[in-house]
Length: 311
Ligand code: NAD
Ligand code: UDP
Image (cartoon, rainbow, N blue to C red):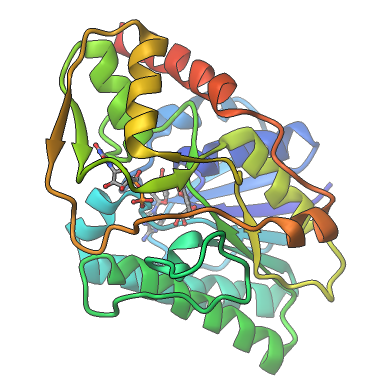
């Protein structure tokens, strides 16, 4: 039995990861400050004697022992990460230093939940791991993008200087049950708006694209990455290469929910990337992984979840 630390474990992705790690027979320590996460996401795990929750802000040092660490703590929705931009940078940078410190002291393996945002508004499509990105270091998204880029740099340097066993996952837009109603990201916004009969808020002309992966596929990719040979550090893209425009997504959700909601258009936020699609050939080769859940199937599961939550 391994003891696994998951920071940000009460969040959307973290709660699914904690669940899967427990199911696989591990002991899990979940660390979270509940900024965007919730006890409701992990309440079903609380009865397990192998699950432990610590309310802690990862910008402060933490002393625990673990065999593996997944560092997920960081708000991920633009609305939340821009709410306190300085805190977002501290969470990525100091949170990484603190968790890397645990990894160095306890000789544990550690993974960073990095992001496709390191590619910024990409000049190439799809994006492969060798692409260095097009990030505006001064714009409103920079606290998140540059915070994660610096976290990647820290991971690489702890690896080079101290021999820490690291893994860097570049996660592309992920959705599924347990996203919060107020998360602010596009899929949860559109589904909640459609189910309530509210206007569907498209930012810009809706021609910008994203590639959405269902959360179960991501968790499979992350655990496979953690189990790769120590010589493989990544970064590796984990995402679904099927690309859709935001307008197509809105139309599809309206159709699937049978909603009467209208599509309404608002200004595009500053620095909003025009396109995003992962090149996953590295993940296919090194992890033997590719996503198996199509958008239709994943959206249906997510719609079913939000129907229950809203009732
Ligand atoms: P989320 O907001 O649901 O989860 C983040 C969790 O981290 C929350 O539980 C929050 O309370 C916790 N947290 C935030 N700041 C903290 C701090 N200072 N100390 C302790 N806990 C803190 O977001 P998510 O979608 O589950 O994302 C999880 C991770 O995956 C993040 O690091 C995010 O950057 C990364 N990621 C997510 C996506 C995506 O599409 N969901 C894409 C790329 C990367
Ligand atoms: N978006 C939108 N309406 C919303 C929320 C988001 O049109 O209510 C757009 C947003 O401008 C972006 C895309 O959807 O172009 C994805 O946004 P999200 O915040 O989900 O993720 P990110 O921009 O970080 O990829």
